[in-house]
Amino acid sequence: MKLAPARAFGLLCALALTACSALQPYPTYPAAALPGETDPGPRVAICYDTLVSSLDQVKAAAQQECAANTEATAVRADWHLDYCPLLLPVRATFVCSPGK
Image 1 (cartoon, rainbow, N blue to C red):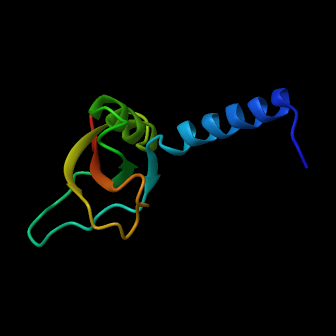
Image 2: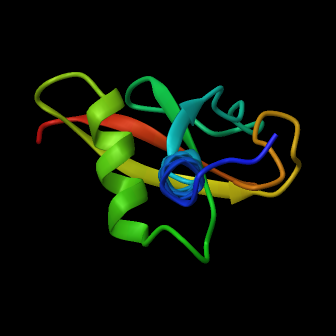
Image 3: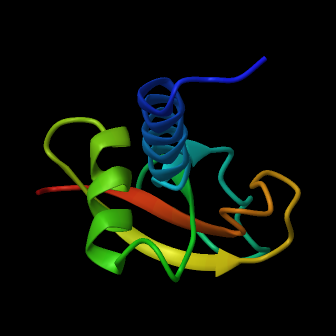
């Protein structure tokens, strides 16, 4: 079965758009606090790729997960791949601190 060139091009464009959106930062389970750490608010985490996403994009994604009138403050990042897939290997954990 042969695809017409226009259909093949359309399919290629759809795949390219899907691949781009698959690399956007997204929320996941945050890392637990280490012994002795106290958080002023709840934790949120974002999976991202350091080659595709800027730190500003990651912080903006974390801020969207925080409640109103709070500020996402970075706590740590890890590469454990337990909660993030291979294409977005970094998990950045933030604390939603009151007083934005």
